[in-house]
Length: 358
Image (cartoon, rainbow, N blue to C red; front, top):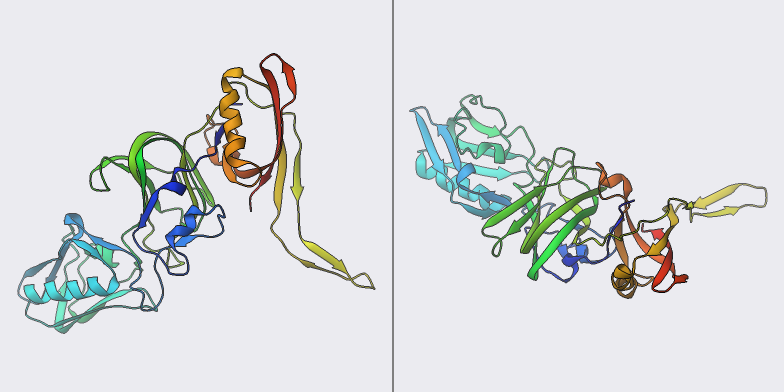
């Protein structure tokens, strides 16, 4: 089978920046091998919540105080919920005659726009509208009221993890292990020709629960993982272990004659009368890979895997890089044994055992 081994994660040595983070779940967590130690976007009461980015495409608020449509143009830039509420107030008051109060509820996660008199939100004007960003999803104007609360939750416009790799690098493999994203989320890897200003390439990833995997063919210094999940019910987005790297494909694949073992490390105790209790622990798999021959031209690359990872570091293996669904045969593992029986001349076999990380 066309196995691919990705044992170097360029993210781990990259200079990392981020859109927002929760102080208890900082972005630096993603550079740790434990995928259960995640980054989360900013959330919680008085936090300001996620990133709200205003651009030319989402800056217009059209409203009416009874004498025709008025237009408030938000200043482009990055905001949290507190600063964007203040900006909406400023621009609506500059365009109209009423006094406005704009708030974001830490309880309902809804925006509210209130005025000193009745006014209409003109949702039917959709060009460059800010209303979808704020939770108004319909294109039907509101009634004339003194207060309007958005019908839909909004926690951000997007979140982003940015990586400066230090130099231009090949990237042939991407994985995201452990996340809380919804099936309708937009998940992209973005590549830039400069420091995240000029977007050069975009790879949109196919959603899978828990593990997202894709094959790439990119060569850049600057990259990011870009997520849009504006109404995530957890009220934050979470990523445990993202991965950007190359893949090594041995010229000779592994043998399918192997043994898979399912392990349950739960602790079971039994009382004198036979009643059992247990401490539940996460189950995991172990299995082996046997390569009947290692091509001499692959010997240095094979040795580099063990030299880099040993028996303590984790990496990804995809058992069939040509499969339609890579997720079904991609695993986050570490080695537990490594043997190289000699065949003849420069030829050796390779026998390894691996353990699924949990």
